[in-house]
Image (cartoon, rainbow, N blue to C red; front, side, top):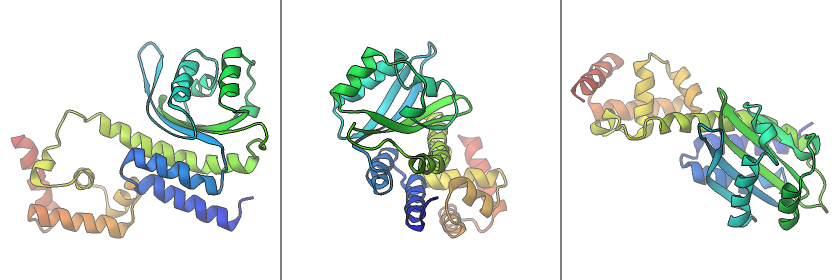
Length: 248
């Protein structure tokens, strides 16, 4: 059972995951902050891109106490099905630890562990609708304890928050190369996002839930949108947005 202090730290981590706008900085901050409740020796947080042939490219890794060479070697290992791929093949968001995985010991994985002083590992594979999004992995040396049930409980609580955040980032990437016409009206990326949800008739509460922000923050954004577009209500906003999209 998690303690009160652990829950406080978890709540702080959830806020960090959802409110740090820069994805790379969010992952770096997370690796630093999570050590307070989940100690580790080394860690890495990858984003995934999957090719049509099934090979996985690890994008923009951020890591602690690992060399760049070790990070690159891990990519080669998962594509050779030596380690990690069995969890990924589930294609769903899953927390795991190495001692629970039934897999043969293979020399390539053994070499990787030995060279990097790794004995235990645990982490989260994140996926949405069968699409792999990313993975965070924590490593411990042989002289440390295995990851506990409490550690897995913490990862289980955090996993869906990571999936939601990375899924939102994936949706943003799909629009790369297409400039949102609303930015021509002076709106920020977050204001464009909120405007699109207003167009879809989301309420303030629904917008707040979807973007994981408070209703107060949502109202503040909407006020800024109204001021920038010189409108007083949703109907006027809808007219301005429709006209903007028609002309673009």
